Length: 614
Image (cartoon, rainbow, N blue to C red; front, side):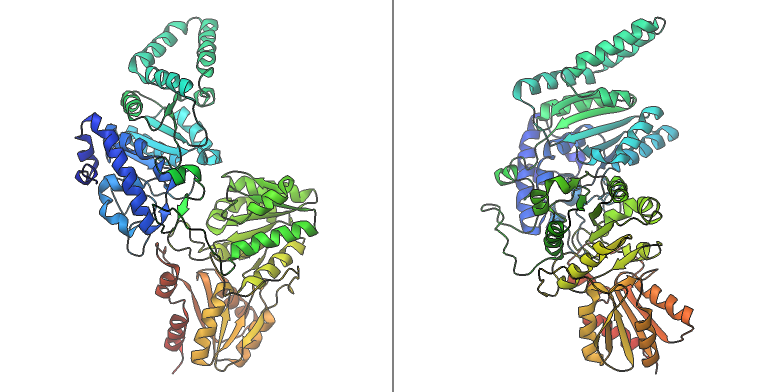
């Protein structure tokens, strides 16, 4: 079935093929992708859309000497398969297996580790300049999607690249539009023409001749822009200093190979616009590329079975609360940086379209946009993943917190996220949020508490954050009421002796399991900031050991807040801080990962036993 694909273990093998064999390889590669991802889960639509582009890039460029940088990297499965990891695909995104994103420590062909958006042009530009400084003939190629191009960092890099005149190729993988057949054919022809050395040489020569006649040179440039502008949208990128080529059909290997071969001979910044189709070659993914974007295991013949949710996810709790609060208060506006589905905002976007804002992959803008709305009387709720909030930290401090504006951060994916690994884990938010003045920071232990905390946050006139984990909670049913909690107050959930466990957020349930084994007291702290200092002092006065437990890095986290409180009060007590260790946690099943970190019930109990004074 994969007779040709099985002969390709490195791109060197690929480059030995005859050109006429490439379509057959692409077909087998696409079949292998569907079968492989159906058994492991992962990103499917995006990978199916870049098969031909991946084949052509490795066929023309001398990777890994030539540096290939993929933006986000959720479209690199074909790249992994062609670079010696075909057999390892059965371990994709699993504990001890290969990552779902490019990773430098995994392969020499992964030139740059990615997973967040809009970084590829900056990284590839750095590599292009490094090659120039060292006298290397290495080429640097950035492959970036149309979604990632909405990120401001991409345009910062484009602006810098044009000024540096390095040998950089930026490939825009545009999968949000289609080219009609006649226009596509014309564009393909023009792309071949404009990527050729004759065209480039003619252009440089004519500029030299016309430099002595500035008005004529300006006229020639404008004429070229208008002629190209009739069939291409390249004027913007030309203004950045790039030679724009395209758009071309990203599934036509003949056009891709010819165009890339021509571009490889050109000097300076080049911009190739490639149009692809998400889900290409698998009918179900072509029909619904969103459903097949990130998938679990599925039957490739019957497709993804409809999900039957027996328990509410925290994301669903947030989405339901958002709709209920929007009905109650017309000042509410919902904002997301391109994560409508993932953040649970689909129904809100349909019911309240005038109050729903998807700002694209632009986390910094999302927060300052929210700040502007808050200045004029609205109550913005920004739905954002913990790992993506990191990208907008300056805006959080400078634009929201300093001005003490009532912006609610609904932070999804707090803690470990499983298969996506370190790049998507929300390991640091409690640490970087609690040190910001004016912030209120909450972590719910169950679904109803999450709803109550969101209500609490919304009713504040200051910045606030509610951070909740990915997936299901313990199964506590939520009501329709919009009841707030008392700010800064925790609760005692179990009375024991000697040891008191101060649990934050998702760690309450494993803390209760450990407490049953140890006969320990358990407090559900609820608030990381302001901390319930009365409860902390009371627990310290009546227990020999205090244990803080959080699904956040121990450094500077909720446990540190408890230690600081005790130090201020002059209270001396044995303290044990449990949380995520001082290392990046790789991909794997979330329960396995928590167990490895000692954050399940048995692990918490074992750590406490080891710390008990003799």
